[in-house]
Length: 195
Image (cartoon, rainbow, N blue to C red; front, side):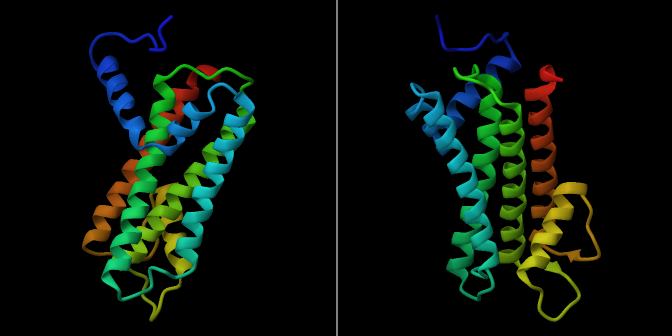
């Protein structure tokens, strides 16, 4: 029996092949493959990985590493944040096109992991806003929490708050709204049959 899920010709097949190619940049896909023979170890490894990624994003944001004039440090932080967003969305995209792994499926666990993924994306975008210095909060020196707050509002309600966004911040805002729409679309397409 083939491991390839049932697809229909056209866009469904194209999306399957895209998901197949994208799994090579996903550490989560590597973890799934590494522990595919033991469902419990796989679930624990994925849980640790998801929580660790969120913790790394929070540490990078709240330690103030982005509040620097060092251009290379900002570029590295931006690259890490962009990878974090892309890797998280790719991992969710891959879940749609591959059969469910063996073992018990806990919808509570899946919902918690999805919530952590959503928080992680908000943290990564907060880092992007911070390193780009593109949000004007109207105060002398914004704190890291201000960037988290702005990103949270943008990611939860698509609200601009009272802060004005200039230059590349507008592109980052559009990317965050797009990521939010993709996130919600992937969530509902993956879980719609379970309702």
